[in-house]
Image (cartoon, rainbow, N blue to C red):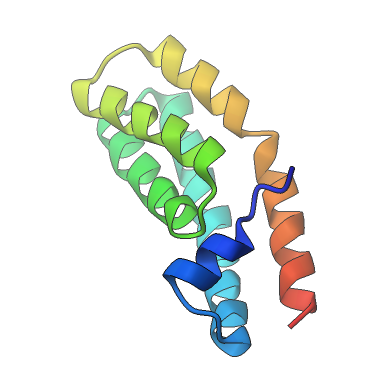
Length: 114
């Protein structure tokens, strides 16, 4: 099952091919940068940065309808805000981590089709 929800984008954002291609391009560059920052914050145990970085990543994924990841990121964000349970944050992040390259590959495929 694909992670990228193109139907969600077309229904909730735009169905214009040029806009979708630009949206995906921006999303891809932001995801790489923001997810790396989140991983660094988790490694450092910096709860405030975990909260803010999880929020950034979550927002991008939510705007593209990638529900399987953004719901876990919401929990990470909430735990960061509460400065609680770094082990659970790490476990949730470990669930998300293998999905990121798959999602980026799907974004590339979609961008190449436009």
